[in-house]
Image (cartoon, rainbow, N blue to C red; front, side, top):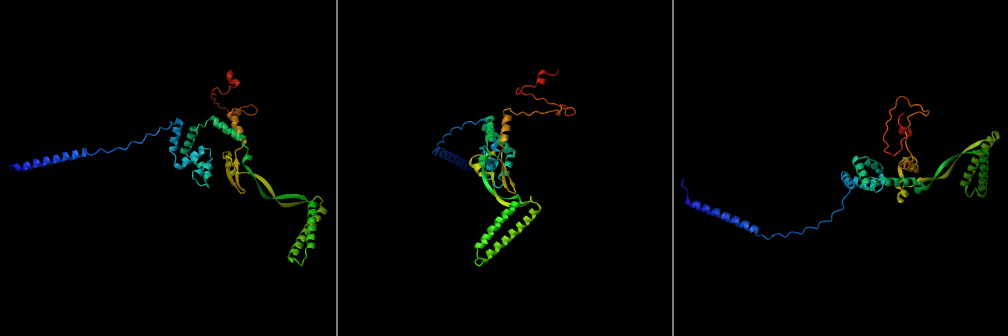
Length: 314
């Protein structure tokens, strides 16, 4: 079918118009006013470079939960397990168990050890703590409390008889000064008490007639003074680190502290005063029995070798 030249001309005009419109649109887009850029914020000063130990600690800390991190930071600030757990918003009722359980977690223990290394907790700090433990006196965190107890005493019967006679004389005097008509009920009570004392005294005198050295068991209520560890006083004086633990008994909570003997022993071992030696023979010098395998480790020059090792085998 022959093409229509007019149609072709209109199509060409339309295409040209579209291209012109497209070019015009593009030109208008490029002619828009440039957007003003907001000036960049000043670059903050670079923080001080972390040491390898600090980087290790930060990495280990990131593996812990937020609550575990709070606990760790308080532990590294020399709080004990219970205090650190309470400050980390654990229940005070279970804080003691929670503190021990937290340190038992691998990630928490790893971060704790890394934190100690990052804080420079070395031999000098260990020796300082040992010295403080050796010089610690538990009286610094003790207080006196009084409690009522029942004592069981064994007394001579003659001594008890004299005590009963003195009580009887006191009651007789009370009755003579008290008009029975004024207070009949009180008079009856005093008379009953007097009869009871008289009966007890006569029984003891009968026993003394048979056995002049007779003894009597008496129970007496009295007050005794105890010295106990004051947890609040220890916190106030910053000495909580010397408290070993607390256990509940039927008489109440008992707070235990580290003993100064522990500090002396640890200090002695740190300075080489005490040395552990393994004995492979009986007290009489005979072998322990059978063949024993002895593993000799190099001492790296720390201790002089025994005389038999210096000379060597014969």
